[in-house]
Length: 186
Image (tube, one colour):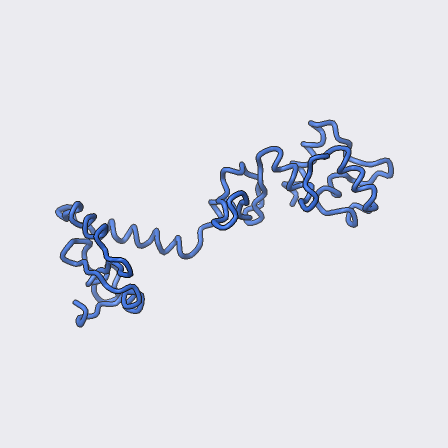
């Protein structure tokens, strides 16, 4: 949170907001950690907030509001302040941003997808008919997956990303099959 403290302090200085109250309590601490840690009363906090931030929504932290005014957001994961554009939006809440920046938001599923994409590229020979493969994918029936008969990253055997190695499988069967070669399905 030192990054946020520094940012808020600079914001207060640039906007001529006092860093301390008349009892020498830190407005920066108040803004980030709340009135108890800043050793202030809730009434004093309310007066400070209304005087310097009259448009702040009631249920929003003061430092979050200040960051939002500057089009910034704090990523707890990498402990940095970044532009709001560097954060993904929640799918269910269109105007809210995720707590981690895009850089930190690399879920294992995304890593798997990237690994799979790389494997597909590495297992695609120069002579493969990419147009036919693309068409095969686009014609996949609903409820089915495009499956590699011989998996691209199999344990004992690895296939190529070519049209002859593709088949349609019901989604459940494909998920059950995973990365294994099943001669019965071939």
